[in-house]
Image (cartoon, rainbow, N blue to C red; front, side, top):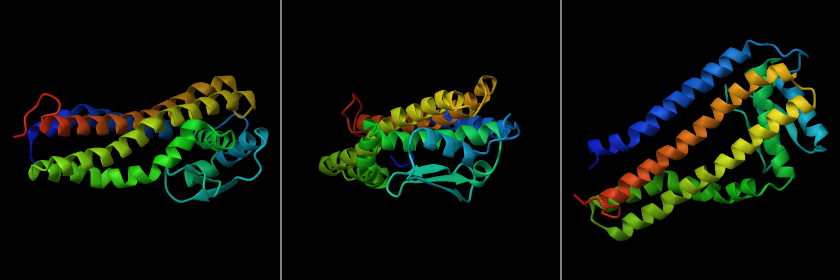
Length: 230
């Protein structure tokens, strides 16, 4: 079962989607990293405008190493921007920074899906590895109890990924709308910003699709979806 070709048949569509999303994200970011914002605003400056206009004064904006490592941490209220975003006056940098500021606004406004995602962080960490191996070993040992425990743990990861979708899409929608409204980008610059954020959102869709297909495969192999326990 470890080398079951059917597993790769199940995962192939999600894998292709994931590769496509990764390519689109890197391609869009690289392209619009070379397009300077008309007002010369950097990612860090754009994020500050977003936060200031939302009345948020307790979020720290800081630079971190790496590329596309940008994130908002609701625990310590830190908006971390990677080097290509923090100090760069480009459409890509501003788009990413505004997106992360969108998460900070979600936090400040008690956006419910974000609250739910925070609750699911720990179950997702356990489910990402223990769930997969629980299902696999449960099938190998013909232990339905262990298999169902694996399903339960893996479902924690899937639930996290599904809840992440509205959180990410909402943050991008806030960024697109407010960036123009606050004068961070001009209306004609929105197209480039949209391409960067839309491509990034697709990576979350691909991750959820991959987990769904893995779960369906194991359920089928367990005979719970019309398959057989070979």
